Amino acid sequence: MDKFWIATIGTSILAFLLKFSGTLIPIKFLESPFVKRLNALLPIAMLSALVAVQAFASKKELAIDHRAAGLLVAAIALRVKAAFPIVVGSAALVSALIVRLT
Image (tube, rainbow, N blue to C red; front, side, top):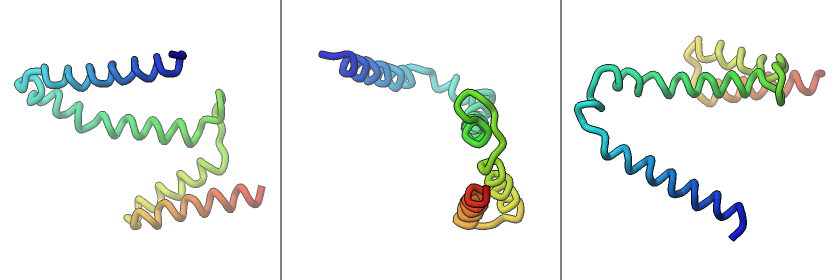
């Protein structure tokens, strides 16, 4: 077996153990207000961090380029409560236009 398969099987076992450990957590702990609040806010924080990294990072340095303009247009479209396809399309269009013009 090569290193790839060892890593794949090891990761699979770790994922199974992590999922199984979730069944061992007492219900009382899961229903606490702190855990509920954490479960509500954690996905928002993770997605925000992912968007920030994808929009402003270029390899190992910060960059403000066409992606930042697209993000700004998407934020404006969300502010005026545009439909999701309009938000995505307008951000992609602005990013493409800036890339094309520069």
